[in-house]
Length: 288
Length: 278
Image 1 (cartoon, rainbow over the protein chains, first blue to last red):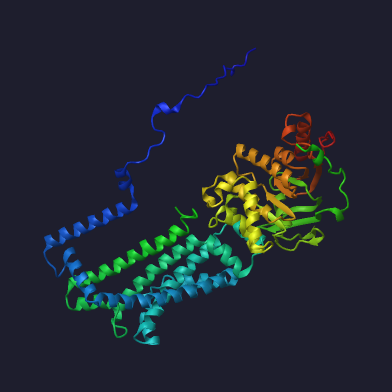
Image 2: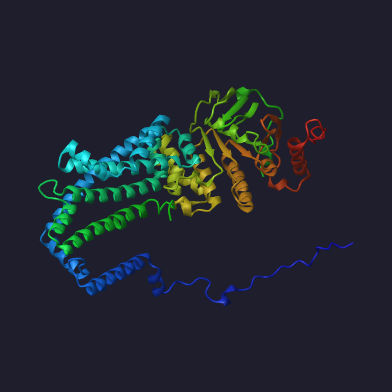
């Protein structure tokens, strides 16, 4: 009786694979440029600017929609005479104060939240209450409490940063893999060292996401707050610059102000945060 | 290899005093949201210096829970766990854990940084000595070329070697391994088992090892503790110190495997346990 599944066995000497051509081939220069992310982003930007310019020229109404070239001219002019630079510096100074304070308070909150169950409950309740509350809605209250000035704006910026950062950090801490936690406790880490050496780096992708969201919220809130009540000190910020230009129906200057807001947003996102990402989460393979 | 050295394991457990790890009458329970689960019931055993002690049992016999208790991550509701006569009352660097998951390495540190980390944190060695030790242990596991690479660029087997190197660099009293090779593919797993054995031949550390593979237990272990299914109770403690890769095709290996298989799967009232060959 023969085995129905039996067939002759096969063993083959390896042939030389060199004859099939390139096993691995470097991409050509053009292929590399086209797939380059920076190039793609730049191409998108140029396309948008061309559409803007063409549409504005066709509309031919600089009061409603100034051209790109006109906006750039105003932008350059105001940078050169210092107005725009001063306004931007005023805004950024307020922003840095508010952002830093917001981060510090968020750090205190999350430290309490990881330390105890009741702390977690307090933070999640507060976050659920205040995160959806628009910072700008607190501005009238801030004006009553702190008066017309930088403290009011700092207050609303803290509000806009705090909850977003605290929420992300806490959820980051919670999603740290059990093996990493046990590994840390195994070598006897406790308290602040445990948080600093294990939890923070392990949760860094979430923390960084929180920082980015917090930054965007803060920048938005700042410009909006300045637009609402205008000049805060002797010199107003970028929001005030836009507000003033609107009063004078100087649309090109309004556009120049908006352009500045966008440019600073882009700069922080694609230079500062990108650099942090490249040195941390991308290097560590925690984020693609 | 080295059969003469490994052949010295005594047949009867000597007094607890000479044991490195003394587990006596340990009952472990943990809570899930709905149940109170008894993982092990009155488990006793001794691990001696230089043992490759394997805890083997079916899924849910509490073997991983047992290992966590020895690691100090949970405390027994009954009985005691002592290491070198000291009662275990929390995690500590004298008992280094190696886990099954690949995420046990810190992704934000290089291979070198990961190996150095426990030594830096515990300050067991001066900085320069710690660095020298890290380098030498990385070389021993054959990863010198990958010293400055981050864990996400390593293969599963390499990550496992780093985890073992990291644990051993600290010279713990005992190395606790929770199914360390379970997540590896079969070929890597085999070479990792061999590597663990050759590392053991070099360094003679004490290791406690949890597995659900009978073959792995017999190959890697010098002593095999067989636990019964849920809740885990001691079924047998066997001597496998003579059986390694060179013995895979010998009848003793098959007999041992069969014996453990019967211990694990035979019905309690059946005669399977009695026909075990010694």
